[in-house]
Every structure is written in structure tokens, then in C-alpha cells.
Image (cartoon, rainbow, N blue to C red; front, top):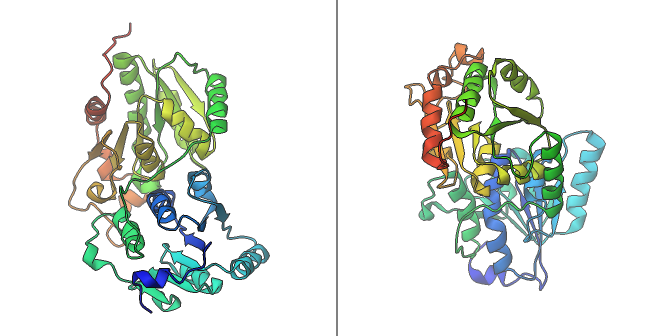
Amino acid sequence: MTTKEHTWNKLPKNPKFLIIKLRSMGDVIYNTAVYTPLKKRFPDSHLSVLVEPASYDIVKYHPAIDKVLCFRKKPIIRQALFYFNLFRTRYDVVIDMHEGTRGATMCFVTQARFRVGHKFAKRSFLYNVPLEFGDLKPRYPIDYQVALIKKMGVNFDKTNPEIYISDNAKEKASGLLKKAGIYSHDSFCIFHPGARIFDRLESWKFAELADRIYEKYNLKILFTWGSGQKELVDQIIPKIKTAPYALLSSNLQELGAITLRAQFVVCHNGGYMHMVGVLGTPVIAMFGWANPAIWKPLSDKSAVVYKNLECSPCGSKTIKSECLAGDPECKRLITVDDIMSAIKKVYFAPIVTNG
């Protein structure tokens, strides 16, 4: 089937679009770059986006999206009903940007007139509009998502991801900060220590970093965490000597609103790092197993801390046993001085000595 411009001219006046983007929060954040250009190209379309629960808040308030679908893996009966609803909605165009078996299957189940996906995906036989975009020479993860949509005749004025935080979330965030002891006149930074076991910085380094930031910049430290990560914060708190700190757990919308008010964020490579970069808050990102040349934050207000070891970046076949046991060399070699130097690159407030 041809993918020339006249193909898309065959769509009805008010076409129904569905973009499938499962997997991680970072991938979904990159995907937000295509919504506005797609809606601009097809202004009368109804755009739905399909994500998993962890990413729902990322796309929930995007103005180009008309409906957000949320896929939950359990129970089986709910899954069956979900697939049935995909079929009966009768989408005109379904774009699989997941490329896994589940995404391709969802795309096929819709029986949309145009089922779009990457030509070289493993399950590309389930598409009837397989697109190849090697001529666009994508380099970074976001480039691949943009390239697929460009092949549909969509123009991009910019390729920046977009995250929208609701006014309601901002209001709730203010209440959460006050409850945690941080008021409108307080300056604070965020520590988000969550990471997989083979990618964690030692707890004592976070504690020492907190004390040094307080001594140098007079900032309070706000600890945040994702699902199942509170224990990492609990390991840090007893080791802090002087820095005032607060603890706060929230959903992603509220966390986004809180992040907008922070002076900077210190975190590992991951979904929250990408969120911070898109929101425009300065971020100090610590990399270990992943390649920062590919996965660094999409922001000029970012600094990467990374030890370029021979084994990095690593994968399931090359990762060392000591890393899997929770003692990754790539993070062990990162010093508090390294992180303080990175902070200096993105945070330009006057130095204040306490005591």
C-alpha cells in the first residue's frame, strides 16, 4: 500500500487516530513530541493515545489528545474487554509506536483501515502500512518516533516533548509542600534516589551531598520516590547530619508541579529524569549502565555525571555479578565532588555559607 500524500486524503472528514505507546515513562515522554504536529496536520481528527498506568499522568492533559486509553495487564477478563473495545471503536488510523508483540497485536485487533508501524519491526506483518524511515537518518530515541510520523506527511516545526501540568495538580502540590514543611518562600532541591539495584548510588553519598548543598547553597532537601522505592530514602535519612529535609510522595502530575518549583533535581537516569528535563527544571543526572550520549536529558539545563568504564554501557549479557548484587562500579566511582561540580554547571544562585 502506498504511503504518498493521496493515501491520507482518503481518510474521512473526522478521522479517528490511535497511537499505541506502551512501555516505560521515558518512551512515552519522547512520544509526546508527535501529538501536536499530528493534530496540526489532521486538525479535524480525534486523537486517542494508548499507554500503561505508570505513564497516564504524562499524557493526561496534553491539549492535542482527545482521549487517553490505559491498558492494565490484569485481570484477564478486563484485558479481553479492552481488546474488544479496540475492535469495536473502528479507528481509521492506528499507529503502533511500541513495536513489541503486544502493541502490534493491539494494532491488528483494531482492524483499522490504516495500521501503521515500522517496516522492520518483528511483527510488521500485522501492519498494512509498514513505513521505512532510514533515509531520515534518526540518531536518538526521539528521532525514531518523529521519523515514523514524518513519513505520514506530517511536518515538525520542533521536536520537543511536551508535558502539561494541570492547575489542580499545582494547587495540590502547594498543599503537599506545606504539609511537608516547605512554604512559598523556601528554596529547595529535589533528591530522587530511586533506581534499579544495579544502578544505585550509595546512600551515604546522598546524605553527604545533602549536607554540602545545605552548607553551600542554604537549600532544603526534598526527597521524592516512585512506587516501591521508599526504602532507598529511608536508608539515606539517618546519615544526614545538618541539612533540613522533607519527604513527599505524590502522583506524577503533582510531582511535576513540585518539580517546577525546585531549584534543581538530583536523580539517576530514568523516566523522572526525562520528565524534569522536559519541564525545564535543572537536572543533575547520574548515569551508570546506560549511554548518556543516547539517553541524556533533552534539556540545556542538565549536567551528566558518568564514569566511562570499559563495561559501560552494559546489558544483560555483559553486566557484572557485583552490579546485580547492588554494588555497581560505575556508581561506586562517582564522588560527591563530581555531583557538586555538576550542580555548579546548572545552578547559578549565590553561595551561602551556613553556620
